[in-house]
Length: 344
Image 1 (cartoon, rainbow, N blue to C red):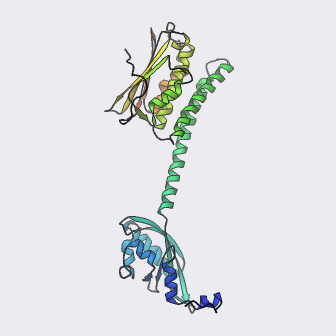
Image 2: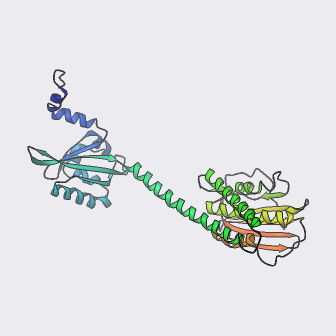
Image 3: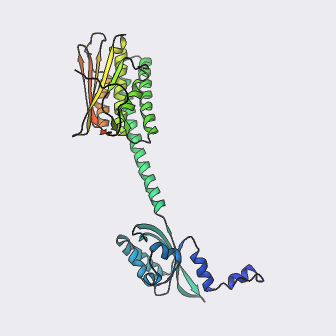
């Protein structure tokens, strides 16, 4: 009983078992006690509330019935070994909650003594499921980030290797490399905005062509609403950038009457998109003596990154490029821009 006449220390010494149990029942953790026979003889209210079982079902070794079968032997081995050695222990295991869900607990036990004689163990438990889930999510995030950084570095390495070969002037090489880096950065910015989840194909295409056709007058785009995985989105953005660069230097975008039709279709059976780039109205097409970086980049590196295929044809009336890659149909999206164009 509370007595103001006593000092705090005296009140602590005079605390009864009933007052201790009252305190334990208000504790924010689950508490248990076991005797020298390793059998539990008491659980506080938070434990009983958590398991949804009465004291009679938990005492003795009844509590072990709530431990996940995959964790039970390990749990009992640690528990029994600590008792034999009279040592503290700490372990994690899954315990069935009142609603039937198995949750991870951190269980810490320590031996206690009365009159210098071993009297049993006191222990406490806290639910660490959320912490474990967060740690697992962080590990997945770190692994995924590492994977994506490696992929990006592989693309940059390929860009650098092929940009600075072929005997072109260094200034020209640097300008081309910087342009490609900006395109790659733009694709990554779009992915960051969408938390590296799937992104809309139309958004990728529009963001890539915007600097080259601000008024949307010379490049017509169209196709069903589709979603791309992150690696595929980067591949498509870089492929379109290379096609735009070549068109602006040698193809349709070098003349006032030139235009580009960029459309795509979706094969639901294979879950792949087929994108077609077709130039028209430009200067006469000259088949290059050798395949430049942009063509090789589209056909090999980016096609491999996206798990797709790419082909480029130098037709008389303009360059045609067909690019295939995995995609997912976005059935609930609505086309809200131009009417899809048809490519002959």
